[in-house]
Every structure is written in C-alpha cells, then in structure tokens.
Length: 163
Image (cartoon, rainbow, N blue to C red; front, side, top):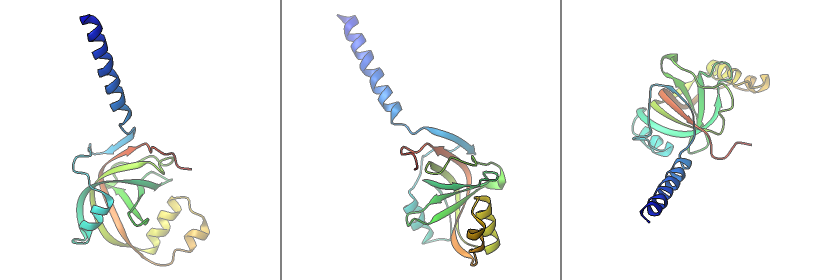
C-alpha cells in the first residue's frame, strides 16, 4: 500500500513539474551580459519614466518588429502606441540573429534615451533592413524617437507565430 501511495504521489509531482515547465517561454538565445527578468517593467512604465527624464536605465520586454538584415547589429521593439524603438547593443559588442526574429519577444536591459535621428542614419537603417529604394528615398526628415542601448538581451519564442 505504501508503494502505491508513493507511486501516485511521485506521478502527481512529476505531472505538476511538467506542466510548470510547459508554461515557461522558450528562449531563442541570450546575447551580451547575462540578465534575468527580475525588476522588469512594461513598455508603458518605461515611457512614463521618460516623461520625467530624457534618459533612464530600465529592463523591459517587448515584441521584435525587425532586426538588422546585414549584421544583426540592431533590432526594433514595438512601443505602447505602435511606434517602434530602435535597440542597439553596448559598444557594438554583440549581435542578434539577422532574420526570423520578428514577432518574438525580447527582454532588454540598458539605457533608453529620447533622441533625434538624422535622415542619413534613418536611410542607413532602412537599407540595413532591406527596404526598397522608394522607401529609402521617401525618408526626408529627421525623426524624434526613443533609442535603447542594451547591455544584455534574451529573445523568447513568440507564443503566436507571426503571419
């Protein structure tokens, strides 16, 4: 009887452990400094902090909308209002995958700054992203935006695959 009870208890514990493991997001890769999600805030909370200061140090998670197709030297994350934030990597010291990351989530740790990006740099980014000559030529004005310099990145596989 004790053996049966032990087997039932072991089976329950094993099945609970398997369920807990299934709920974890799959990590695609880690890049730069080792980070974790402790102290993570939402994109909206980050934007609220930027209302008080032009530069803040944060850990935030967001959806990846694009990565540099040339080297993987930057990626874009979507903001609460649908706009995008450019993420580059500290001291050009690491890169992310060049393709297939759109729709996944990235946890980033570092410094975000309000900045103005000039036309030449915007065109460079568009070329790196593989945009058409027409799209690149249509860039004629500097853009006020958020720029994030990440010390570390964790990319998680999206639960819903992008179409």
